[in-house]
Image 1 (cartoon, rainbow, N blue to C red):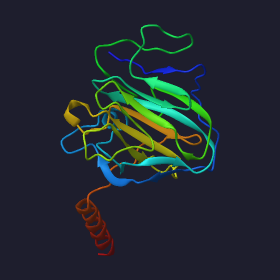
Image 2 (cartoon, rainbow, N blue to C red):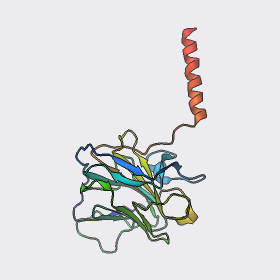
Image 3 (cartoon, rainbow, N blue to C red):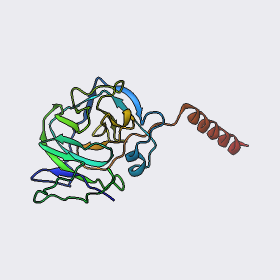
Image 4 (cartoon, rainbow, N blue to C red):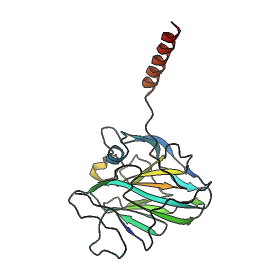
Length: 234
């Protein structure tokens, strides 16, 4: 049974933000891919039809110029209750016992997972207006022992700590990023699908940057292309 994210805010906007020349940048990042060996990121597979995403561990996210930012939620698969706070709004994977007026609540189900149907249909979204340049003030919180993580103090993936992985949206010119939260649970399953959030400057849909083809795959494609050229010449 599905359970939709609950967003605690007086004003929710499901609209995209105004176009902007701002871009996201990263500090202290280490390139990598998710999920870890033997793991499955269910948001990537269920929503984006991707087996993995390329991006960065241990990154701190900055904005180069003031802008409105759309925040969209694409899913989670976690045993803990997790939340994301940004722009004065906190969104959680747990439906509260007392519904606040004007909020769109989902059903309380047994399964602690929820996935958007596709990139055009996030589970929930809102616009954070007038976000200033510099380090973005966002954080993830978990009910697990890891506690959570704040942008600016995001650890790498070497320890059993809560952390987030950053993947730029494909073809977004660094105006869209995906944050893949790992709450440190399930004996550090390393799949980074405990809560997946997209931050977007301006309008448009995008998916995470997919894992590139292995070098052997590229060589094979090159060889096939060469064979086609030879066949045409013969």
